[in-house]
Length: 94
Image (cartoon, rainbow, N blue to C red; front, side):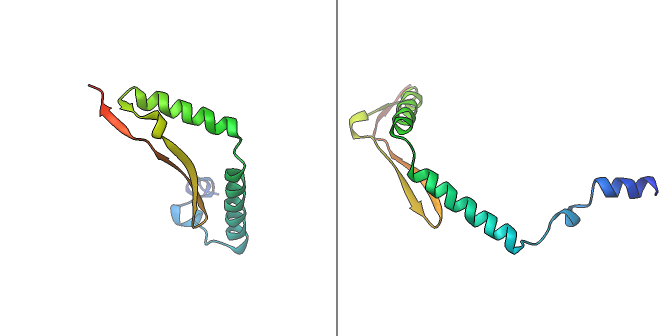
């Protein structure tokens, strides 16, 4: 086996590494999405409280916000979960 053949064996060309999606890969991806959704539905309250607190701390470094009107939650759309936050900004800090 020549040196170039050995290199090709260990470092295949980009086209050789890209494989079409098999049924198995598609099923695994779907299962992963279902698990992500399920985990998103079961986020512990203390985790959400800590997340809210940390977001407030970070944003407050740069802006004055109205914490009483802050709203956070999760939205599900087309197999994905999104963290959505509505944070009223009073003013930007200088």
